[in-house]
Image (cartoon, rainbow, N blue to C red):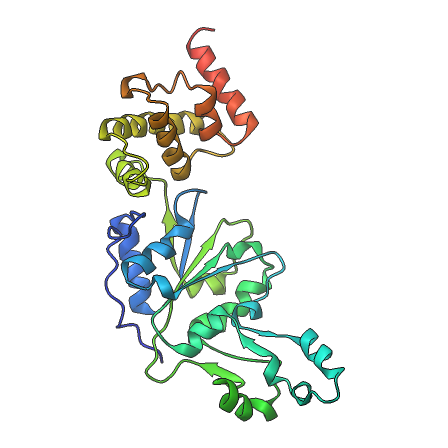
Length: 313
């Protein structure tokens, strides 16, 4: 069974552009220690996808970060291996091409399959697992539980030859002294995930930070110091106003609440426009402010209507 011990402790505070709460960091470390995938959910913009990058960054595994974005047509096999049947068919048209007589030259390990076969420390992100058909997470169950799989398209008679030529056979598993990859799976709950799949994962719910000091730290980490020499006073004022804007948006049941990326862009705009902290007001957002913060026309109209009512207009 692959080991988990080579991984350092994840603090959540040492990444160049990400700040994880102590609770999230603890859950990440538990997932690593238990060798379990971590299922991450939360509202859009709260940092689900970037968590994997932060883990890789802090643990010195940025070069070993493997990202797989799930599509509606994705199958579990797509994460493990690929059989290029079309190229084999094309090669078979040439009677001098002996490769087409066999299957193994046309088998390639995909990112998750490669990570399992290598057995080296790595971080694997399976992004938006809920976009795929319900069979997708079901088919991943045994793979994520045991970190081994079979290449169904590879004939058993070619397994030894494939092992000699390609370094893997029909049954792929980590070396005896190998290491399980850290697997982060994100979901927006567009579809209900099957319970057997959930039982094999640890779970983390990421909420948008409400602590203004943490938000200010996130902003500072994401501003380019060479281009954005923003004052601490402006950051603090903008963060405070931003929290009030989000709260108002929540009261208005906005379709898309502004999140971290909108906050960082808004502070850049305030800085470029040379706006003073005391002149930043949630009640008097300019057209530029609204264009940066809101992404849905109905949300803009609702916000304008509310501020107009409060101003007595």
